[in-house]
Structures are given as structure tokens and as C-alpha cells.
Length: 403
Image (cartoon, rainbow, N blue to C red; front, side, top):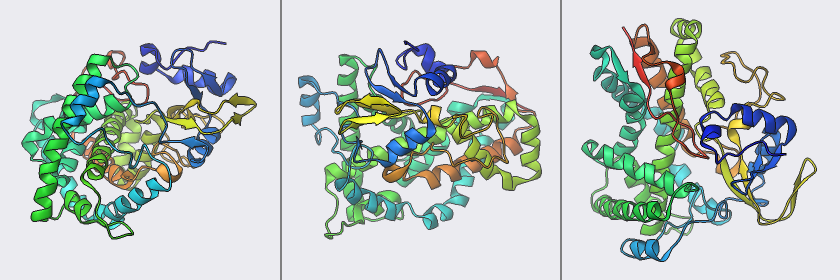
């Protein structure tokens, strides 16, 4: 039976009924337009994430390549090598262990006052205006400012950093991109490569107290530094991971605060509950709706055969709404005691920047809730739209009024 397709812009805009139909009637569903298998139930998705031997990240989706893009990449440092998100053990373990040394709990905790300063500064920029597009003026700027500082990118170049991030996302999940789009993506990514090669060389000569220096100075088990191509791939991954989830979860959280004024009051009365708010927003409005894997052998889930070589889409956004796991999954509940969500994935590819993302989201939502009185949408909620994307979910804009 045809339940629709994740390639449909209408499904991408509002996927919840599609998800529910799949969980109920077709938990393993061959998407008729995409040609990939959508896995939609919580336990199946979580198990697939953990089974990296059976579901490969390295072959998760065919990488686009043409003579035109190859010529462009030849003027830089080649197409990006597989390090973290698009890699499997044992090679993946080498890079992950290095990055884990950089994203420690101690480092993230030491960043709290610094992140709070950025949060307050961004709100100061618009608080007297009584209205703003809070997605683009706050949710986007907070994580991109943090990652820019950590990677040594001057704040006046943040818009360029955001463009590099957007292109990295579009090129890696480029199911809806044309040949011309991919040529443009390659040109912009080579620009990114040249820029960061210069920054890496600066850190080798003059180390600073930042993430880029840590990456340059980190050594493998064989006491070897990462190559320039490897470093560029890791930086690109951190750019995407350091922006998309935080930006889109912040905006989704702001909408949840507006929809649930009693919960907003409850949070102001008891700030210890913001941690629970963050987890519920991550679950309900998962910024990463799904990730691709390739079946490395014949698989069977719930009686459905998945042939070896098939592309599978592990649908996080559906799994986090599974009624078998979460009672009334669409409701925001600060006292929820259900199983932990998988908004950051699971297994060996669990998001390396999850601690930093949680910190930024918690500080950002608390400041918005406590500083912007009478917060409300400046447009009807049905006028809000999301960026068309199979794997990610985020608003195009979020006009709000306050005061």
C-alpha cells in the first residue's frame, strides 16, 4: 500500500500523520519516490543505530560526483574524506576517540558563562523593538557564534560560516538538488577548505585556547596528528552538528513555550525544570528527523525483508513519537519518565556535541522565557513553514512579538 513519500514537500512540512501510519501499518516501508526503506518504530530504529555492522554509515547514501565537481574539488583538498558521521569502525573509532578528547564535560561546563554572555547580547539587540524574527536573529546566531569563536572565525564572517554550514547540509543530504546545485556546492566547499587551511596553519604556529587548536594538537594512538584533509572533514562535521540541531531545537522550544503558557510559568518558578524542557523539545521536534544507512547484509525487521545493499532511513522523528514507548507523544510533559529519546542518535554515532547543544539550548530557552514577557507569535501558527529537507527539520523564520 502507498502511504506517501518522504520526498513530498507536504510530508516534509508536516510528517506526523505519515509517521503514525507507518508505525501502525508499515513499520518498514519502501518509499516509492526515494527508493529507500523507512524504519519508523522506536525499538527498530534504536537497534539499527546500534548495529553498525549491519547498517553502514560509510555507505549510508551514494555521494554525488561528476566530472565538473571533481575538477572543482581538485582545486582544493579533494572531496571530504570519511571521518565521523559517514564512517564505520575501525576507522571511525580513531577519529571519534580524538574528538571525544575535545568535547569533554569539563570543557562544556567551563563555557557556560561565555555562552550566557552571547545569549544576553543577542537578546539585547532586539529586546527594545518588541518583535523580531527570533529564528534568524537568535536561534541561528547563538550556536553559529559559539562555533565561530571556537574555530577562530571572526564574528563579522558569521554569515559566511552559516553559508558553509547550509551547503554542507545540502550537499550531504542532496536528494532534491540539481546537477547545477552540486557544482555550486563544490565551489563553496572548496572556498571553505582554503579558508580553514589558513586557520589551521595559524594554530600550528600560534596556538590559542580554542577548539581548532585542540584539533591541531590532538594525536592519534600512533602519536600522529590528523592530516589536513582529515581535519577539514572533522571541522565540516562539527560545523553542521554545532549549528543545525541547536538552532532548530531552540526555535521549536520557543514555539512550545508559546503554546504552553502554564509550563512557561512553571519553568520560571522552578528553573531546575529547564533540563526536562530541553529533553522534551528534542524528542517532540527532533531537529534531525532521520539518518541514512546501507544494509550490509540481508536483513529482516518484523517479517519484512531488506535486501543487502538497500538504503535505509532510520526515522528518528517517528521513533521519538512511538506510542508504544511514549504516552501521548505529542504532548510536552516535564515529568515524563519514558525511555530516553534518540534525537542525538544511538550507539557509536551518538552525537559528539550533545553536551554542548544541551547547554546552549537550556541557556537560550531560559533567557527567552524569562526576559521576553508576553511572548507570542507575530503571525498565525499555520503561516510558519519549514525548510524542505528529508533528514532535517527547521523553520524558515519565526516572527514573534513580546512586551
